[in-house]
Amino acid sequence: MDVRLPLTSAGICLVLLMSACSPSDEKREVSLEEKTTQFEKSLDAIADPKLKDAVAELGGSLLLLERAQLKLDSKPVVTEYGEDALAVLKHYPTPQALVDTYINGLFVLHKESSSDYLTDLQPVFPFNFSIPAAFLFPHGLEWQSVTLSNKRVIAFQPEWSETDPGIQLSPSSSNLTNPDDLTVTYPFIEGLDVDIKNQPQPVSLQGKVEVIAPRRLYSFELTKKDVGRTRTDDNLSVTLLKLGPNYAEIEFNNSAPQAPEIGETPLNPLIVQARDTTGQFLSRSGSINETAAQISFYQRQLAKMQQQKTWSDAFEKQLDEEQRTFETQQTHRYSKVYFNGPVDTLEVSLLDFSTVTVTRKDLNLPVRRFDRHTTQKTIQPLNLPVLVYDDQAPIWLKGATLTEEQLKKGVTISQSVDDPSAARIEFNHLRSFNDELLGTSFNPGESPVSFFTEDRNGKRDEPIELPPQAYQVDPLRGTITYDLNLFPETPAYVVGSMPLFLATVEKQSIDARQLPKGLELKGNALVVDQKVFPEQDWRFYAKDDSGNYLKEILAVNHDASTEGPTLFAVHYFYGQPTRLETYRRTDLATVQYGYEVKLDKADMTKLDQ
Image (cartoon, rainbow, N blue to C red; front, side):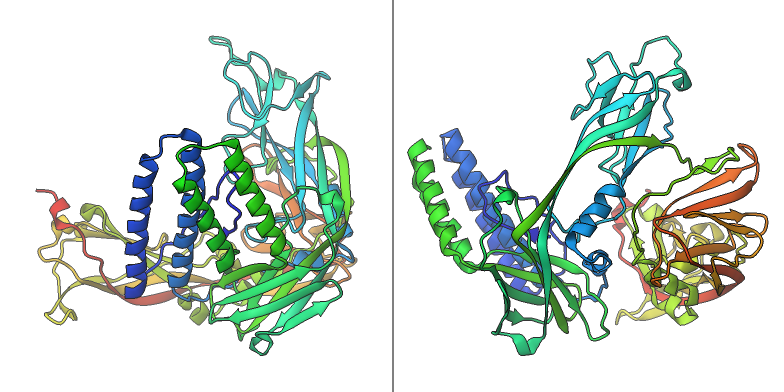
């Protein structure tokens, strides 16, 4: 949740965090709800539609900002670790080198579709970014057309048209997890069977990309000793105003003027990261980017709007001039950043956009087909002219040495009692590399479970005698389902044991020039003989001479037939491997997780009569 004004744009989209509130927070929430109700009533009294829209936008955004502040302040401080947002940049000598890798590492995959009328295209980027650690530099990617195998060019359109009788290229509506995906849609003709193999296939995708690289990035390391001090490097300065238990208030400035090439492009030059006493990065829970003075200014503007009877061009001009005057007086920018955990040290980084390099490139990318499973014996090349490291691999591979105690500590228990006839208890654990190597030969053993009533003090009391059909334990999914219709008494506690599974993993490091039989390197592709190294028991990671793990682009299984076994697997990497790490599961143990759970109360009126 990153909240930023000014509010004269199309509005603000906030994801509000749900959390427990203290009594004082509850009072603030009641007050906020009352304020919201009063504001909605005042809107109903405004007759002029333009004035009503302007008041609704500004007033609604201020209320959202206040609600966000309340949620962030009341959220319990629970430690949650995240990634180093700057890790990817640290692998490249200059910001421009990162830009070049981003552009030159982009390619397009032809994806399988379940329909004869659709062909999906997936642009694959060399970096995976997530909010708030999105791509560090301002950028834009615009698709223009697709060229088909019959040399026909289909222009991109922003949405699929039901009335267009021809072939269309539009954003995919079926895959929300990959918003960059595109779909080539072939016309549907009622009563006519269509074989997609006879349709002209996409062979290249055209577009253009633009990325603005800053002059540099500079990082300030700050602790509590720096509160109130201004740290400066050339034209960049940072002041740590306050360091709370789980938040930091920061003021920052670039004294040099912004590069003219940027124009109206919105910039967010600040990257704030925090570590706790373990030295690990804490994940962010959100930020508020307005000072009290800024909020007060917008509240005054709102009050002026509410005093008007009608909206006029002169009034709009007056507001714009007031805002421009106010903004020119704000020589420094501000951010209050919240973290999931207690803060020990801060890394405050600023992107310097006083001079920039703007890279623009026309794209004409071949559409490549690499199905997850193929019966082709030929290994396709996929050697991209970029080097990309996998910074998550060292963290992920810690699961290879997972202990029984660590596995148990990672268990979370959730309940669902919405349906009393199928109430559920779920035992989940944070997925790790250990889960990858569990295989399929599980021996869960016994999963004993007993339900108990509670005494007057709310403590566990007597066990409840139950028929076998009253509950069901699924040890492989880690769930208990129970039917309260079959309980002679209301249960308050459940006690038992749920199996967890722990793989014993053997690690080896191998020189890429001395690979054993069954492993072969063909350029940046590792070919694995599945008869020697079966997939359920083995995993492979590659490094280059820097000692960093190379990021895997994709993997393809070459099968004997559509239903036959996998003959060999091919793993493609961004870069040339010089060492391989192999991970082999040598044993699988069952770990019993003992529990006592206080049951959530179900609505007994929903029981079958």
